[in-house]
Length: 77
Image (cartoon, rainbow, N blue to C red; front, side, top):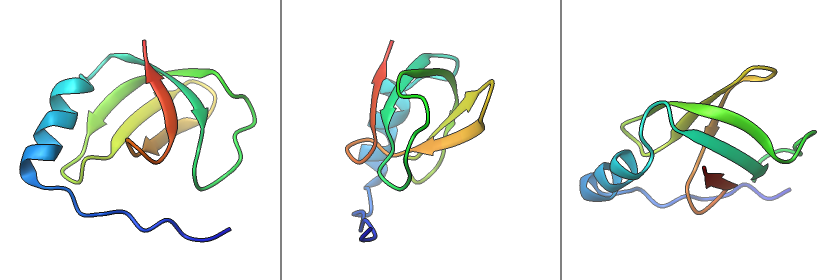
């Protein structure tokens, strides 16, 4: 598997991601870019969006997973 090279986000882009993905919102994960997902459709809650624009989601069965908009496949519920 080739590594994914991600572009550095501007402060404005990070603020837009933080505005879109609010803490406590539900997310359904469909596919991860860096590893296989055992259960597509897994539901979790947004714990935070970090200063790099990464979306940290807490799942009951997996702990936390960090998602990247435009790289991982997920949907806001």
